[in-house]
Image: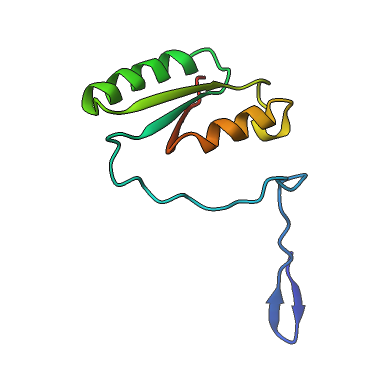
Length: 107
């Protein structure tokens, strides 16, 4: 229900989220100009179909871009952002070694 002050309506906007994301948003990284010679990280989130979907993607990418390399990373905890787990250092090192990342949600 709006409050009315001097004939205009004022609204209070509330967030439906009970907490704030601990990792600040940084926006979308620019697209790679080409995948030739690049290393693409394949991030498996622990869901049942994540690995088979990434394997299919890897086959397609390698067929289209013969010089492409891939690097796999499997999350260390299910449904927890990897940056908040004991695998944080390994994850950060992995990210530094790839040019781009493909992630699947294998539900």
